[in-house]
Image (cartoon, rainbow, N blue to C red):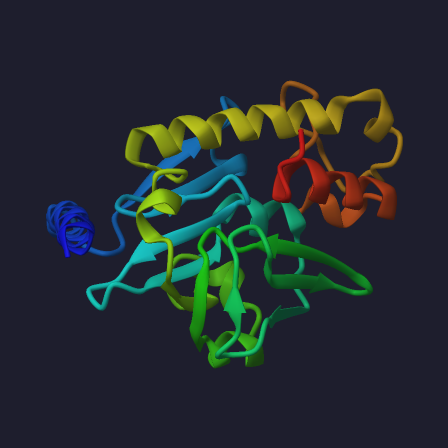
Length: 226
């Protein structure tokens, strides 16, 4: 009983802080993190959302469940998204197991779940209209809802607010280095003008790479096995 009380208290406190943060701004007030090259490579991060190292976001719901989606960085660097596929509703899943994948032609990126639990809801509208993931990745483009079974320990592994923004900036820098590395620079097909500093624009860049680079990106950034 004591353990349940402690867990309940933690959840309540987190939800209170979440509500406070959301009421200070409207739902569309976004915190931006971007490279020094300005608007072209801007990535959005809503305040009050948690980020996982798998480039999936998590939003705490009043029900105690967690809504999951792909972050703005992931959807932007991929480019065109032809389909989104999710494990079946009602599935029991463990943290780190594949929860959903996005498809571009014959290529896919598999995203691990940031939480263990039961998949209680799937965004059927997104499955019918995968473009929602690009239009509103944090809102209409959400992917699934999970009833967590190991909430507190797994929540501690996520980042939020300034910590999340700092992590995302580091990922953007790491991705730029990945693109400029010798192993990838010759696999990118020219796709228009480069940035003013001679760098490669990140928005949609994976669409111009070969399958080897695509898989390396999945392992290094989505599965985060760096």
